[in-house]
Image (cartoon, rainbow, N blue to C red; front, top):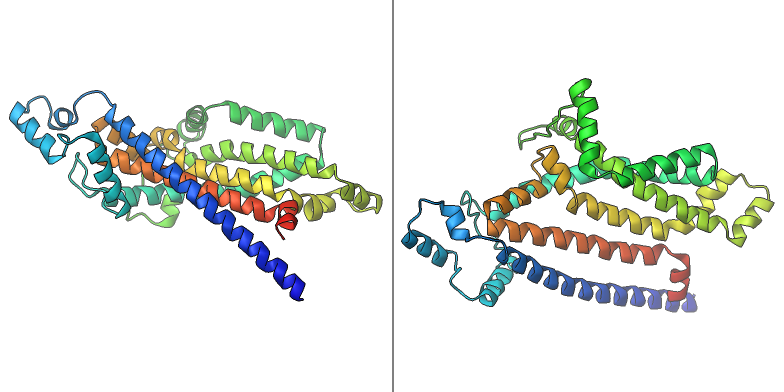
Length: 330
């Protein structure tokens, strides 16, 4: 018991060290990305003050507005002030409407999370089941059909799939709305009905990625010696896949699920624009067009933090779910 306790303490210590190392690397990555976002926004063509005030503004008004935005200060000072305010939760006010950026991002980011989680609830179980079935019936017509279909979804861009679904399910069949319009007062059933088409679009894309990775991971495990022993003992192949192959292939599966979850939150800009969905991606696109710098910078950094955090979670879960890594750590 004492030996087992020592091994458990060593394992938890190694896990904690891993988390601290990855967290430190993630913080450095966030800092670098924040610098890239700031430089990218600064490199946008045109003058922010003139764009916001319009062509009718006088030079004196433009100059006063530039001083109000602190655009007359050197870039490194503005970057330091912006990063310090962001760390303390001060995102400033929108240049377009004067509203607090935190309020604008909060509601929009909640909508993006709702769309991502709704899609994940369908895509993740579907991808795992299809991946297990494709591995079970490997090299059969079913496997080839599933593989060809998923490869087609991966090859098509999201907006192309979205327009096909709109053309069939909205224009021709008139089943679902072509625009995902929601508001804060809308009930859960109304929100779900409004996001069916964008959720279905994202499901087609992420399910294909996760299914192919699940199939490949299970097939790789099926070549192991203990799987052959189970087959010799007369276990059914489905039982072998469910009880032995899939649990031992969780590490790459968890990793691809986490990456696709990050995509569902960060990479939905095109889908939100196509369906005019009031998410953070749509807000980012609108803010870039309006040169609304506080919203652009805050939205970009929020996206980056979410993506890096989910990748950090994927690394940790992959290590914990990998039997070889787990045994080596213990």
